[in-house]
Image 1 (cartoon, rainbow, N blue to C red):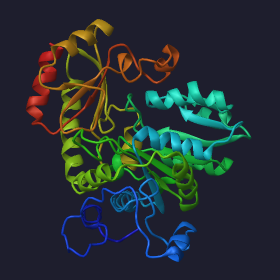
Image 2 (image 1 turned 180 degrees about the horizontal axis):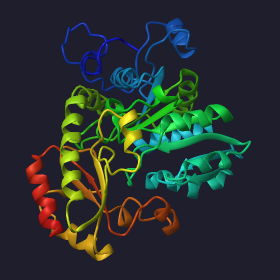
Image 3 (image 1 turned 90 degrees about the horizontal axis):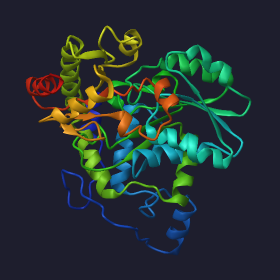
Image 4 (image 1 turned 180 degrees about the vertical axis):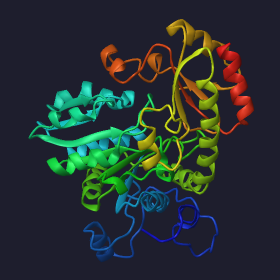
Length: 388
């Protein structure tokens, strides 16, 4: 890890300058690359010479994006994907064999849950869930064929927090891997590798882009694990496009300053909602009322931009709230400059079984707010009039 500060690494990590001496990195919109002669081509494909061969394998724009994320996370290596779910699936598919077992937090993104319940059973891969509030049950779920422990923190959509050091200690004791989805926190707010994670996954579509423009995903971590993920991705083709990598690499230059403002707005909104008579409960990691507030303060720089709260009145209360929203966006995305309100029970987690929803704390009236960069007075005003 460089001794330079986060913001400097984000701004100054760039691909090598071309013969044109450009200040801003150009777009490398090319599918392939050329070789000087037969020997260079042979040596390159034999990996005796390190260079770009084909944009499904690597590309200068993608390399720059991955290099930045590795420096930000303190990781040895990484690989970038077309989407966050491509990163999740490719990482799992690389690590898992038929007959393997995974232990996962029950509060995970709906599509990840779909992999565990719909597709992995077809390949004889089993998943056991633990409740975020019952981490003492994790060790009892580990079997001789358990390959890794998987967790999101903060979780989607319940904004629960898991103690990464505690999870890491369990994994080391049982000689299994710790894989962490760090999407909600970003590398600016949290570095799971420092707490013992082996691999860290991001949906770059969220705060990394921060403006709702492009899809992307990335997995970073131990070099020997990333090597295997790279070989899987070479064959299966889920790699990130050069254009999206170029956009995301530029976005990372402002990640710190954007995230700080997101977090400032989120804490103010969470504090407002906690005092609102139409709100049943609020979860935000840096609210003192959050059940894992102390852990959040220990492993996160700030509380992130996601708030979960429940509108009084159940499903009808939630529906009338969403129908009354004027400025904020009704969308299933998050991590945008624009504040987004989502109803997880009917959108992102609509296909999740009722008992799993309950275990993840997803109630009919739960609202997930991705707090944006509008003026906080306007965000509060819109949510207030919708609640009323």
